[in-house]
Length: 135
View 1: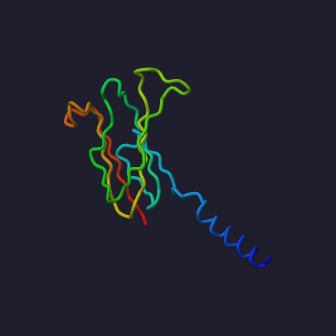
View 2: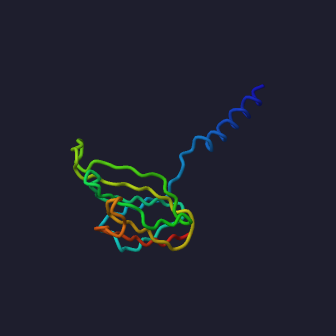
View 3: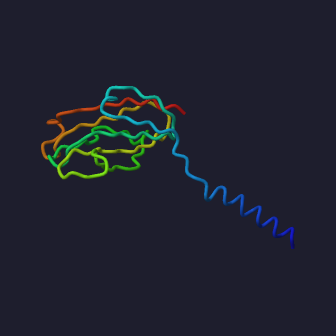
């Protein structure tokens, strides 16, 4: 009986290690507007977080012009207040996009800052990030 209990507990611990283990997100790379035009080296499985300032209350926002889904998986898109601790109506905010590198290769992320109803041709800013994804 003790032997059976010991085997059961050992099995429970082994299974628990796999079931409750934290999911690895890989290394995280932060890209901001000052990084536009830069080439970034990362590995498959790494996370890319893009943070760009925008003023959605004026209609302007950052949009993907090119995002190669063969190499990148979009995990999340959100905004965060620039002024810490309080939100000011109409004030600029950080746009945050979280992507995961899926496989090795070269790709680019192109974003443009424009009013959706005016179209990408009227973009007042553009940003291009070059990614070198290693295995």
